[in-house]
Image (cartoon, rainbow, N blue to C red; front, side, top):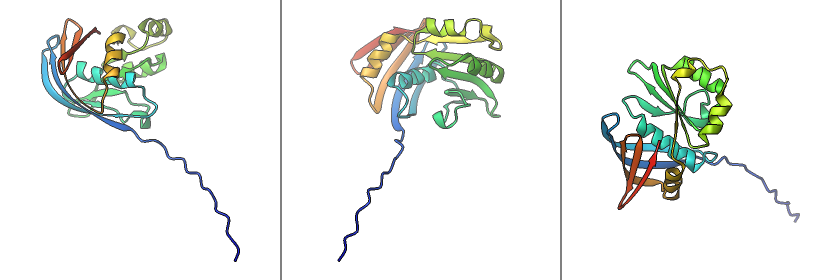
Length: 185
């Protein structure tokens, strides 16, 4: 009886996103927003923890009716976070990271309010954008997240987290149990 050689079949399976669930008690004195939020955020394997935490903070700091995360990498033409009114019209385009001038030009044409939350060196971002053609560039808001606060949150990142986020004079106070972290945006 002849033996049949076994074939090794290599299968490449794309890694799926990891789901995070955040229970957040938001007290934003700067904007008069006081809400309890449950935020479900999918983290793609190519997304850094710093990006995820910056996206989470941005969604809290911009929280309003109609705010939502995009589909992520599967829809690269959409902002990281958007705000739409009841008719579906885009009211705010919120980017995370260090978008290029072309993307910001498109965003400024598409939405009346555009904000970038960066977890990277804000000076490098500003120098890259200096002199670039960006529609309504004077209306663009760029907010840098405190890198020490970000690092402290990333070190404590868990797939299920409960935290209090208080905002006063652009200072964030993040309480995780008995511990409070602070940083400026």
